[in-house]
Length: 277
Ligand code: KIV
Image (cartoon, rainbow, N blue to C red; front, side, top):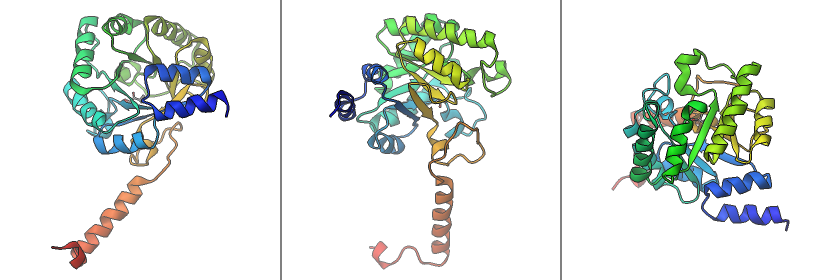
């Protein structure tokens, strides 16, 4: 058995920590991360072997039906995180600080991060932005809370960007990503999400730092990958960017199941004698 096989097997048996992710990067073992917002799904994803569960502010879209991630509140994120934590035995649980809960000041950021950690039992927080967020990142980490960064397309700034198109195609913005990721690494982030940037840039910055990068629409050169679980499962139907691979058609499966139930109820085929007392 090779050294790599031994340490991966050990990592699979134990709880995933921020240190595990660093080791996975240095051993060249890709990190698998998905979003989760509720107990039942978190339990299934955890038992299926996911390394990191992100209680993403994409809850605003997929749970609440909003067009953007902006409306979800800190209280709502805390509720989702509490549900997820109850379903998890192995994965590292990271919680997004939502829009408006950290941009005001590093003091506000720390207060929000402390609420998340105290009230949910999660293991880390994530926040968007490079240079502008560095003071908050430092302050939160100084309080003993691990922080994951998020660069490239940062959906909380959608009204500043005006579009969900790929970021950092131009050299000037690519340079900002290069600078920002080094700042986040220096500030003590344990990992950084890279969203919708060219694969060559993502590979380059991944190789230039010691902490792992987790890509979404950032190519195969990142240290790991993340998708919104509802996209991967085919539950979301009208969101089809090229970076999403659908591993199931659960919307189709659910529709068939519900249609079958409606038919059976109408035909008095449900419940039958075995299903009654
Ligand atoms: O909220 C979210 O789902 C995210 C991922 C897209 C990384 O931040």
